[in-house]
Length: 152
Image (cartoon, rainbow, N blue to C red; front, side):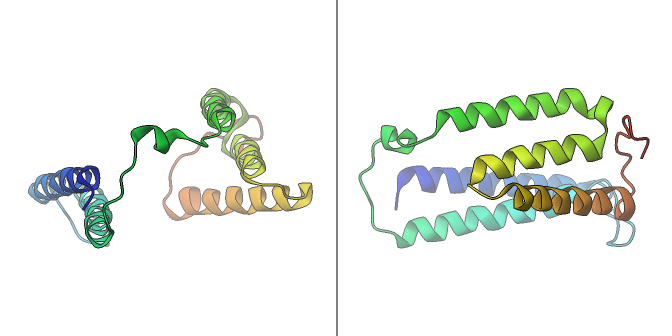
C-alpha cells in the first residue's frame, strides 16, 4: 500500500468521523425538515465513502515507486491559470451581471477549455447546465441568486 494514500485516506476518514460526531450533536432534524447538522453529516458520509474507497483501492494495488515530481509532469499550467482567472472574474461580475449571464459565460469558458467542440455544442451545453442549476438552486432549493441586469 502506498504510504501517501494510506495517510491521506486515514486523515480524511478521521475528519469524516469528527464531522459526523459534531453534526449529530447539533440539531440533525429530519429529511423533510433538516436541521443545521443535516448537511454536514451527509457531506461527511460522502467524504468518508471516498476515503474508504481510497484505502481499499490503494491496498489492492501493488506498490509503485513514484517520485513527487511525476505528479506534476504533463500538467497544463496555462489552463489552470485560465480557470483560476475566470473563477475570480466570475466572482466579481456575478452581482452585476446576475447568475444566469455570469454562469453561462463561465460554463462556455470551462467547456471550451476542456475540449474541442463546435460552438453550438458549447453554447447548448452551457445553456443546459446554467438553466438546470438555476432551476435546482432557485426553484427547488429556493436559494436567492443575484438577479443582475436582467432582473430575474
